[in-house]
Length: 151
Image 1 (cartoon, helix red, strand yellow):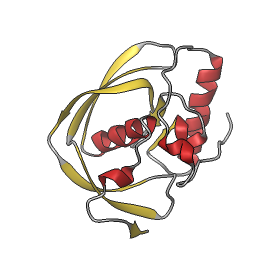
Image 2 (cartoon, one colour):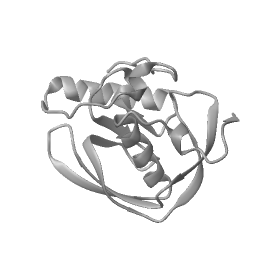
Image 3 (cartoon, rainbow, N blue to C red):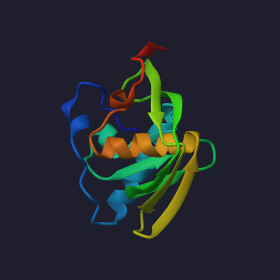
């Protein structure tokens, strides 16, 4: 495993749509392992491959309940609404209140290509939406309600 450099706000790659993963091999497993190590090292709760400069539809999440690998994720259900403080490893020191669904259901593959369904409420729903947005080239700044605050 290796730490990856996190792409910072202003880099145009963050606004690009990531490509579907077609090949489930050791390179994908290495990427997922590196992303998890990088996320934990940075004290994050989620990380998308585009944030380490890779335009593949891969994200990892851990809100304290164990790591989740999301390959080719898609939100299949979204309910309710919540407003919460949100930040991003690509925008260090910045955060703001955003509006996201209260509950989501996500269909995704694991590193071996096996399909799984995850349900998230509250923080987990927030993080699912944040990371999947990254894969579509969307930053949390587009969901801000009242602008940035400094951490």
